[in-house]
Image 1 (cartoon, rainbow, N blue to C red):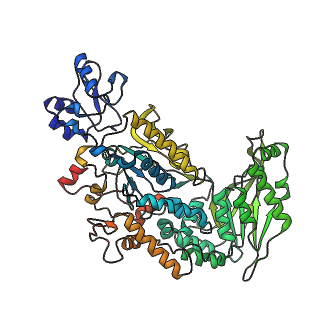
Image 2: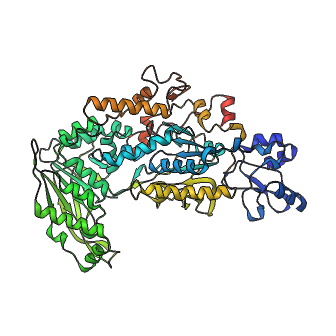
Image 3: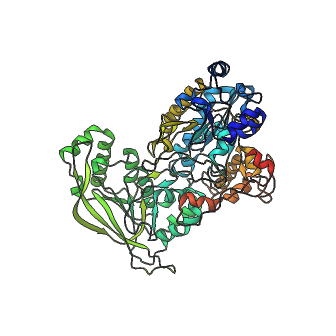
Length: 633
C-alpha cells in the first residue's frame, strides 16, 4: 500500500522502491494487489479509467490486465524514470547460469548460439574449478569421457561469457540478488545429496559412505577429501581386523560399477590416470580383496550398462561369483530381457565371465573376487568386533540382507521379501550407490525472498519443459529456468544434458519472443552480479584463474608421469588462480582472482553440501558493510 501511494507522488521515488518491492498492480476499483512471491521487481500506479488502461496497453504491450491476476512488467510508459527499468543497453540479453557442469555449459552454449552478439552469460560455480561431475564424477580410467571439456573450454574462452568460480548460490548470493540483474536465470547446480537406504546403522557406524562421496574422494572434490580422506582410508587400510577384507556396494548402476572397479583394479593400472595421489596411495595399500554388489531385483532388471559391466568382469585376476539360483530366469524375466537389448547383453556378459574364469593377474598382482548378489535388500548394518572409538562410534562389520522374490508382470516386476535373511561378514567398507539427489537452496540470512520451489519427494525443481513454476499455484516464475539433474532427476549420461539444455533454452527463447523475460534494473548498469560479489568480499575465480589451475595441475601430472595431479584444497586453488604468490586476501585485480577483502567460506562451508552431519554449518554471506553496498543489493 505504501508503494502504491508513493507511486502517485512521483515516479522518481517509485524507481527507488521498485527494486525492493514485490510486484504490484491493481485489480478492479484501483486497489493494489501484491503477489505473494515477490518475484517481479516492479511497481506502477493504477490506471483508473478504461481510457487510461487502453493508453497504457498501447504504449506498453507488456502490461497485462490484472483481471487475470498476472504480473505486469514496468516499461518507460510507467513514468519518466521507467519505473526503475530502462530498455536493454545496446540490445544485450544478460543471462546467469548457476552451475558449470555439463547441463550448465550446454545451456550457456545454446544461449550464445541463439542470441549471438547480444548474449552475455555469467556462469556461477560453487568450486573454483568448472565442469562439475565431468571433473569430479567421471572415473579416472575413463579419460575419453572427459574429452568433452575441450568444448567447454571453448565456451569459457568466449568473450561474451564470464566464469565466476568459488561463488555458491545460497552462501555468497541469493536468487533475489540475481533476479533483478539478469533477463533470465538458468539453474543447473545438479544433485549434491544422496538417496538413503533407511536402515539402522546407516548414519551411526563408521565405514558407511555414499558412492558420491567415494567418487568425490578419489576424484579430488575438495570437501570429500578434507572431511572423508581419513575415514575412507581407515576403511581401506586401517582395520585392526585382519579378516575384514570385504567391501559391500548397494546398487547395480554404472556408478556402483565404477566404485567396484576402483576397488578391484590393480593400482598400477591407475597410476597414469588423473586419480588423486592420496587415493592412489590408499588403494595401493588397501586390504580389500572382495567386493559384494547387492541389488534388490533380479539380473534381468539390473541397471548397469553392458560396456561398463564387461570392463569390470574382465579385470585381471578378478574371479566373478554369482549364485546360480540368481541367474534362473522366469518367463517374465525372459520378456524383460527380450524387450531391452542392453539388459540381454549384460546378462550374457555375466554368464560368459563365470564360464571363462578370471583373466590372468599379471606381474605383481593378486587374486580378488567380485560377488554379484541379486534379489537382496539391506535390513541392518551391524558393528564389527573392533572397539568403538573415543567418541563411542563403532565401525561397520557386517550387514544383514533380506532375500527377495519378484512379483508382477513383465516390465513392472516388484521385489518382495520372502522372510528369509542372510548375513555378509568381515566388512570394512560400505558404499551406497542407490542414487544422487538434488537439494533445495538454503536461504541466506540477507535474502528477502530466497525462495526456489522444490519438490522434495522427486528431488527436483518443479518445471514444465524447463520453466520453473510454483507447484501450489501453478504460477510460472518469470525469468527462471532449470536444466540437468535439477530438472529431471539424476538420470542419463553426459550427452543427455545436451538435449535437456536445448529443451530448456528453447522454452526461454519462446518466452523471449513473447516478451516474457525480465528487464534488468538499470541501476546495475548491465554488469551482472560481479560488483555485488566484490562488495561482499567474495573471492571470485575467473576463466584466467581456472586456466592457471589447469596448467598447474597438468604440469604436476607430467612430472609424476600422469595426465594431471589435481589440486584438492580450495585455498591452494585460489592462490594458484591468483598467480601463485601472496596472500589470497590481497586484491589481485584481473589477475585470475577478483577479491576486495578475504576469501569466502570455502571447504568448511562446502562440507554442508557434502555431509551436513560432519560439520557445524557456517554462517551465510556477510551483510553489506556500507550504504553503497546496500544500494547495490
